[in-house]
Picture 1 (cartoon, rainbow, N blue to C red):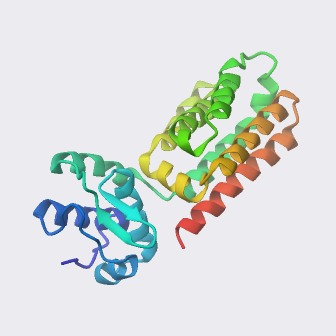
Picture 2: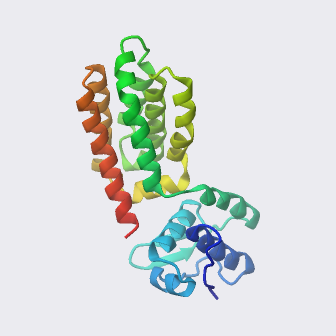
Length: 239
């Protein structure tokens, strides 16, 4: 039923497309259990991380449900075929999340010095408001609201550079925070519970406090801690 994946595009996208094709044909229906990650990887001749990424993406799109200790099943509320196909295009735009983190880390580290130089002349309310929203939504139950506030925080930091070119360069990277697959992986492997979310908020708060105090090394240390934890979490998702 499952075929070998040819290397014409990202393998996780091809895995997801093949699962959706089987659902559209009726070979898999609501409530049906999918083969294990290991079985899918063998049948399609891809790595388990590629299968795992495909399943995480399909779960974020509500096409499949994963039940711990039981397996992955086609969702009881599978969407209409045309909607699935449209949403799947989002997966094609997803690149390695470790690459995204590396790019964001490099950009934000490079702009820190400028932000600190500008901090006395710029309005910091957008950053403070985003931090307040992160604090008030620092729980697993309000994860999506927390991530929305996280996006606003990083966007407001970019605004403190007062450089439209930096802002333009940052937009595609900031947009990844809103990606369904990125959020699903972050929730599953990094911000897994209330304590981890609160730890993440504290790192952001310490980062901004260091910026206000013009402590470049302190700000960089907070940023390095944040991205280091993210990298460790996403590396676990690929193993």
